[in-house]
Amino acid sequence: MLSIAEAEGITHIVATPHYRPGRPHAGPQAIRSCLAQVKETASERGIGTALYAGNEVLFHSGMEEALDGGRILTMNGSPFVLVEFLPGDRFLYIRNALDGIMAMGYRPVLAHAERYGCMLADRKNAAELKSMGVRIQVNAGSVTGESGRKAGLFTARILKEGLADYIATDAHKSSGRTPAIRRCRELLHKKHGGDYAAALLYGNAGRDFGIG
Image (cartoon, rainbow, N blue to C red; front, side):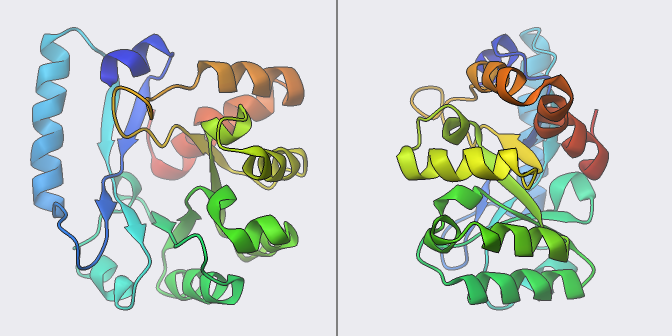
């Protein structure tokens, strides 16, 4: 996966393994240990991609306490935490959950905003979250049209309106859901210009997460 990422022009990665209550998952110490091994192997193979630790957290009751207790990793130790919801969750639930995280002093990043039915039904919901201070992430595949028509239309609209903050690969493996970003980058440059593309692909993340 790192070889693919490097070939795609990716220089920095925040690894965000899933954290889902009630399911097996690695804790912070295990994630850091695993990441150290990956960095060592990558260095031996001449791969220069910089790696940082994080989590993609399915929102759940008690999440704020888990954050304060250090059982969940933020993005590279920053105040920003990557949060996902179930596709059918209602907007009020999502909004209140993110508001609660912010009240604890953290900055939520809504993962793959284009996957939630309530967001697709009314893009004004994205604007409301943005006005609250929530960061919004979308997947590269939704920019290139690989995630379906509805997700693609929603993503195109919020990009046009300047509501998105980050675009990420959401990669899971070396085939199928790979760390591919090149085609997305080319489309962003063509449709939105180099400055906005740079901010979405690495500038905003570099500033917010302290990487780069």
